[in-house]
Amino acid sequence: MAARKVVIANAGGFWGDDPGVGKRQVEGGPIDYLVMDYLAEVTMAILQKQRQRKPEGGFADDFLVQLRKVLPSCMERGIKIVTNAGGVNPMACRAAVEELARQQGVADQLNVGVIMGDDIYGDLDAILEGGETLANMDTGGPLCDIRNRVLSANVYVGAAPVAKALEMGANVVIAGRVTDTALTLGPMMHEFGWREDEWDRLAAGIVAGHIIECGAQASGGNFTDWRSVPSFANLGYPLIEAYPDGTFVVTKHPGTGGVVNTHTVGEQLLYEMGTPSYVAPDCVAHFDSLVLEQEGPDRVRVSAVRGDPAPEKLKVSVSFAHGYRIFGRILVSGPESLAKAEKVVEIFWNMVGGRDLYEEAVTQFIGWNASHPPLSEHEPSEVLVQVGARDSDKEKLDTRFGPFVVAGLLGSVPGITPAADQGRPRASDVVGYWPALISRDRVRISVRVGDTEEPVSSAAPSETVSAAFTPVRLESVVPSAGRQVTVPLGRLCLARSGDKGNTANVGVIARTIGVYGWMVENLTTDFVKHYFRELCEGTVERYELPNLLSVNFLLHEALGGGGTLSVRFDAQGKTYAQFLLAAHVTVDEQILKGVEA
Image (tube, rainbow, N blue to C red; front, side, top):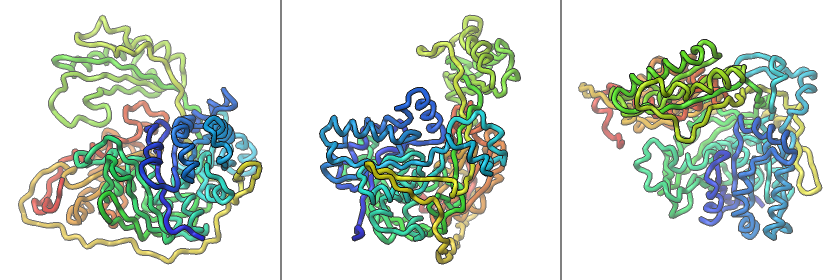
């Protein structure tokens, strides 16, 4: 019999998140599932290197830190655990979990399910010889161009194997590169008996997974209106109360810090979003269809999610060696800090052969312009000068650049010092990201529970098409009183930003329907391109989501190559939303009515 309600608790949004949140989620109130997300593109390359050095490595061992605190309680309470901590070695992760269960006296209650087949690193040559080019989705170049530098290759797998593992009796499910959303959708498919072609319901599960995949970002973390968050202590991580019809409530445990409202949930929906049609292995979820309603304190109901058939191919995340990078930092203080910082930089680059000697060279003043252009004309009392370079020649970076970060200190300006813990900088590996597509029939996924292993088809279900829907259209009349006032954009809107490779996204939410009408007319791609002219080298796209009173901007070529290889301080666009909200705009004073910020 299908469940009537399932409570899914997030216990981490990245490898390195709060190690105590799992215990808080388990002890804070009734839950059915504990889900933990550990993987990112660069993580897979790190784990592959770990496994090459140590055969029993290659998984996110932070998972064991969390599990040590909650495994007996979960076994006692019947709470099931789903994670992608398996990385590139999920079987080794299973062995470590089983050993922990023996140590804690719950081995007889444990039943681990392992999802395998996403790691295609060892099969790459056969796949390429079979006619798959694995062309870069951004550049169109074939993978053979960088084949000798590939470090990892993993297919993004959907939720069906997670549901299968639970069906086979697993109470701990360990996966490698399943999608972040699959960790939440899988339990919903299993508990409610959803078919793999029920597009609207699957889309609802994808939206639920996207909302909680980044942990506290949905419950007050990184929130534009951070001053309205009652407390950041004992921060409540998000819960999903899911129902068989695809509706769900986003909430958190009572008595915890943070806040859950339509704006915290809306910001997270826009985080790292591309077009409003969110493509996952399971289906396409339309973010411009859903409805958010504040049901009560710290309770947001999500409904009306629409979905379309699953995509023809699956996405592959390939990482590859892409040279080296190095950084050095010097603090410059006192009167005329900016002028002195400029002189320090001039002296340094002269000593190391000039910027042109390196494939990429960057200077940033942390505290002034490291993540975006200055917001003030007032000179800071001190800045931290950061110099960085990227190059294919490691020896050049280590011998021409590294030794001179501090070598010129005594022959430079007054009031400067290196960081107390900074030794001579050394070059480190740079990992490039190569997104590609692969035919589903080339992917072999299986699930192992105990000694039983069963295949899971990677084929897309028959294309039963959902009923067509028309995205919401709003008739918004922009108020007009005639008197113009200039205000920061943050007075009118909220925003959140993130990254997809070398593209930054900035999702902007209007505080009122009147502001939304103004925003659609005035917050244009030209405005955003000009405002980010020092950061964005490519084009800017805009997508409207009237149902969320939002627009989403995609800033192409805006991250210095992307988080895995950029030498910028903010390589993932985390600060871009706040920078945009600092822009001053001129509006009719009537538009400010109803704006609470």
